[in-house]
Amino acid sequence: MTSPQPSLAERVLAELAAHPDGLSLPRLRKRLDVRMSLLMRTLAWLGEDAIGGVQGAGLVHVEEGARGAIAVLTARGRAEAGR
Image (tube, rainbow, N blue to C red; front, side, top):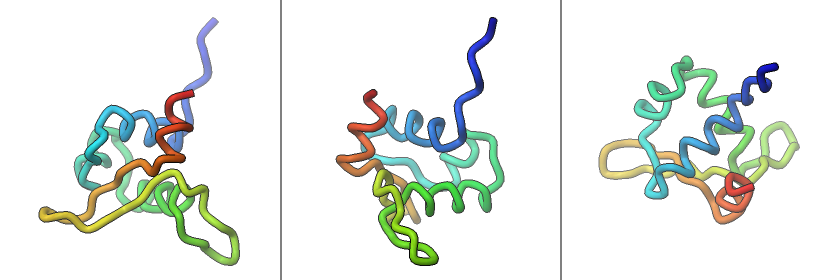
């Protein structure tokens, strides 16, 4: 019997947990092998901002770095990924 495939959100959290300094969005997209649009929607859902009146999960923060946008786990995201 095989275990179910992890959701994209779980994969994002696991990948970012393995990179505490964060990952650039293009690199994260490539590691997860998903379209950028799907990654952006997932990051929005996992992020800190409200969308359409629904508060984000607060697990991931996207910030502008020296080489573009990077995604990093928040303290709450690190706790969630560590489960």
